[in-house]
Image 1: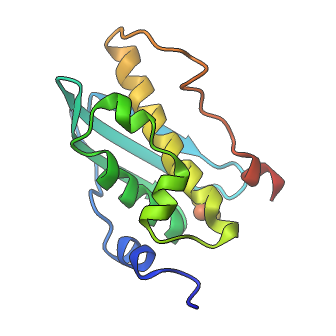
Image 2: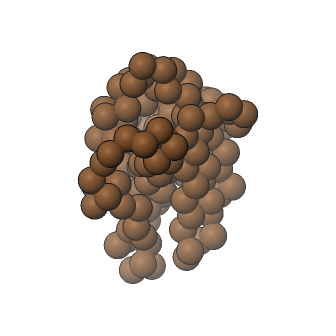
Length: 143
Ligand code: FES
């Protein structure tokens, strides 16, 4: 079996929604201290719906593929639904990732959460800080 699925290769070679939203409603930036990869996610929100989403990832192929898929999964969805996006859902949508690359998908989940948190902060929307905590994933710190 190939190390990477066709979908991973496709999203790595032809990433969707790459770029920046100048008037973004929320911007989330997360990084992995171990590998040094950085992911920045921009969201545009209208009436509680994520109408646009773009990303810039300075990192590995899996980080690019997972950010690309994450933007596809949250675009057009209510903000609350985007918050429920798990790294497992991103991995499943990509037809899997090698075990040692799962932490890259955690970065994508956290970038979405960080962008939503920024949106909530900028708009004075109350939230449970625990639910929106962005932390280093266990897999990353074990490497
Ligand atoms: Fe750093 Fe993939 S190796 S996010």
